[in-house]
Amino acid sequence: MMKRREFLRALATTAAAGIAGVTPLWAALPSIKIKRVRAFLPPNPNPLFNQSDMVVTIETDSGIVGVGEGGSHDTIAQSAGRLIGQNPFEIERLWQDMNRAFFYPAGREKTDGIGALDLALWDIKGKALNLPVHQILGGAVRNFCELYNTAGVIPGITSDMGLRERARLTMEAGYRAFRFGASEAPKFTTYDTRERINHLRSECAEVREGVGPNGNWVIDFHQRFDLADSIRGCNMIEDLAPFFVEDPTRAEAFAQDLPILRQKVNVPLAAGEEWGNRWDFNRLVEEHTIDYVRATLPNVGGITEMMKIAALCETHFVGIVPHFTGPIATAALVHCLSTFSGPVLMEYNYQGRELPHLPVCLDFKNGKLYPNQRAGLGVELDYKHLTQVLEVTEPVTARAQNYYRTDGSITNW
Image (cartoon, rainbow, N blue to C red; front, side, top):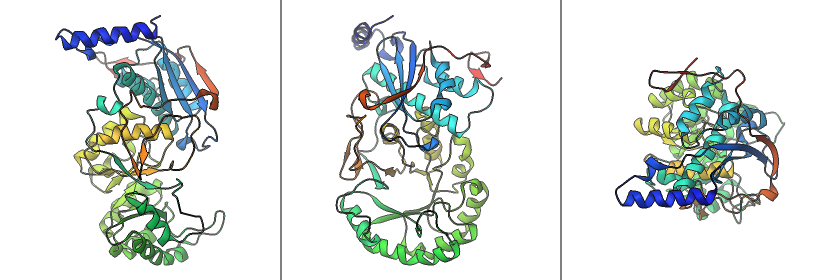
């Protein structure tokens, strides 16, 4: 078993040889194997499967531990077993195996779990190379990621404050945009869309006044309206120039409703916080039916898939506005989106909130997130605040199978 000190010494030797023009670092990563995968619940875990903030670790025989986030016990256990004994640097091959080995394509919840493991694999590679993940992905093209706030604590804002003042204070805190929900009502009460949409214009006018003539604001229709009311609502606020209207119809109807909506309204559209992998939405991007994709980590399947989505969006000049996610996945998003050349706006939840299990995680300042220069994802765990819920040390082979093309790459069975 290779110890961490021996592993780092091998890396140093390889790097020196590369400088001398003998062997590049990439070609000579030491041969290490995955020996254990564990999962932990953080303090006050999010109970929603697709917003999971469960912490996942992948341990190697070199001593390097990769950190990821997402999934649940049942949605990662099987895939974690596919990693035991494997080379953690072969990330694409491992992703294909986790997604294909059990015949049925991963659904959204299992894709989220695969994404959590994928984050940890990229963290391992970054730590092995002593590079931040964004450098491995090609390097940052932006100085910081701009944000809008959803559930963070902005100084001066109180729950009883009106939209105008909340919008003003949000912009003064350095955020790129102010976000609010369309015609909110108390939970578990009647929501009459025909009645509530009558409040939309006055609310948006108040927000426009709060952000100022050159400020930005976004509104989340939250899938509350059917197509007819969504068309009416978008047209009602067009002259107030929203940055975008989010989730204007039900997600189940996106494929048929959004193309119709696109032809009938002039406001920018964003959709996709409930999407999984890229096959959920590739046609909507390719036809530029939406202006911003809201897919996020780890839901899409991890960094491996997010970079393919970024390439798809770049090709069709569609921006990326990922839905809020757990703090580790948020750090991973900064690494990914720092390298994306198109428009980016991130939803952020953590200003003023304590994360006791993550003494080092997010580099936030004045309404912006900055790519860190620490190795891997640049996050550190405090295990005493975590509760272990899963440990996998043996390979999972039951009902697993792969076929290979003549060149050795994985294909469907």
